[in-house]
Amino acid sequence: MLHHLSLGVTDLARSVAFYDTVLAPLGYVQVWADSTAVGYGLPGGDDKLAAEAPASSRGARPRIPFGIRRADP
Image 1 (spheres, helix red, strand yellow):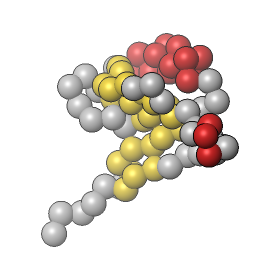
Image 2 (cartoon, helix red, strand yellow):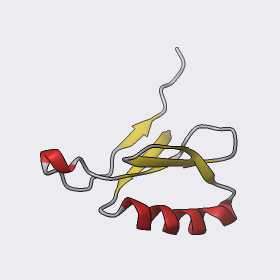
Image 3 (cartoon, rainbow, N blue to C red):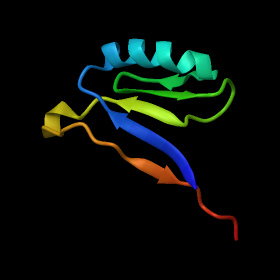
């Protein structure tokens, strides 16, 4: 089962404005933020989607990592 998705973005401020607007009708809000990324999810919950700026010092390109929920033993 998909746990979360991170979207690499080239302009974090512009992307945050976009995701704030398009995710609001779904009930998603910013659940955390720092200088390189912002996580979105339901209020009081974990992030399900994150917008992440690439590490410019490594010359990285935007990427799309995702997490898979671990099955309980």
